[in-house]
Length: 187
Image (cartoon, rainbow, N blue to C red; front, side, top):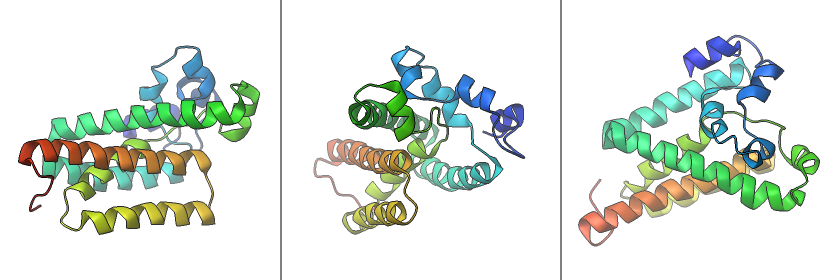
């Protein structure tokens, strides 16, 4: 993230429009088959404030998940939830709301978006799934996202956070259930 934001100039300012269009993700880029955007957009920030927020969030969530579950588990869950969540948002929310009209899609979402929060919320779901009080904490996290949406609406980001949190939680619960045979453990 640091290298990508230094390279694009968003570490100390706004992400230039040319870089956003070159590496950001949108319905149009996905429909055109440019799936590399599912990766490139993850490492960028719109501006320096977003970078700081994402960096702190990444350090806390990625660090916690990696410490508890290991590097490969963290990398896998991050990538799976970030990519799957992005595809769900673009093809099950933006595309239907826009009627596949790319101009309408641009009015629903940014023409191009960036950020790592989808994978981060997927990891958060995995972390919460491993907690004793997960059935109380998970709904509290979802309520917090909904409250944030009501106060500062961002349909795409907030929808992505809900989808990836639930996906990360469900993936970890499924793996845990298979390992223990009962779905509960003493984490």
